[in-house]
Length: 236
Image: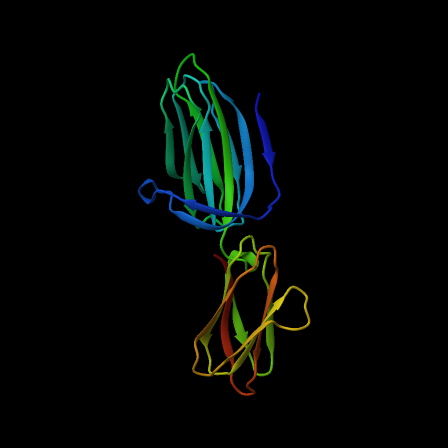
């Protein structure tokens, strides 16, 4: 009666233009289906879909198929109610509602779907879709400090769309830094920049990025000065 499937994180480019007033927000990034379930809910007990994402955001998508029951889908993050999606009774067509939850990396996201009508069934489909905007490891900027003549290499996840913004930001220190951007395991960088001692940030906007895996190397060229850094790759 009920089917539940969990999916591997396969990046696909996604753009949601969603209603801010409904708590949807706007999400640009890479999509991965984290969980999907379909079935029939009776008044006796709700259906639950739970996942702990490793993505920046999730979009909860609930579809109520034609059936007479009034249906509620309550969305929780770490057991805190964030939104309730309502489906009135008597709907004779498939209706889909969505909600975007942010700042959910490592937190439990739970959807509880209940039937509020006595004697009627509710047929539903539910997806929890992960959205990753940062391509850096852990879906967050990589930070640290480099002493003189040392370097840091950061390998980004494969891009799911045409444009990627790579940001190398100085968080502290006055060392001169050399930045190199490589395409995968290539031995030669295709982009480079010298970050002067008074320069705070360098941004590279790369096109033709779909399925490419970039590697960013930051070298501290100074001997006595340190370089605090933040390195990130953003899917545009």
